[in-house]
Image (cartoon, rainbow, N blue to C red; front, side, top):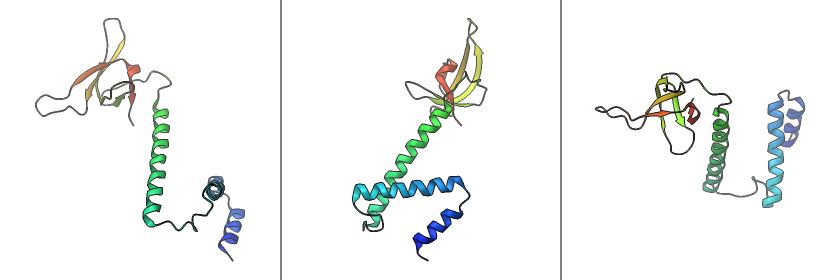
Length: 141
């Protein structure tokens, strides 16, 4: 039995929809690659260095896609409730990572979050503190 015949038999017997969809996408990507480059990956005669470079570029793209999904999933749909110890990041403008050290209300009754900057801690002075409106922060998982 050839590899192609074995693949066809396995696909016929497959029960996992995720695996089936991945097989279909792999075959579609291969078809696109052949149309684009005029050769299959097995016939392309790429060096190990070239293969590593292609894999690295693809993994960097994957990292960007995953980061985008993660960032989108962290966007609050409702105002988040912050508590002491939460790791947070400022969601717009300058970068500010830190930990919540207090939650309070100002004189107008508006909630404010006190965050200690995680990159400015020293043994003698502690970390820089900043007070944020809750809408300016996202919780970091």
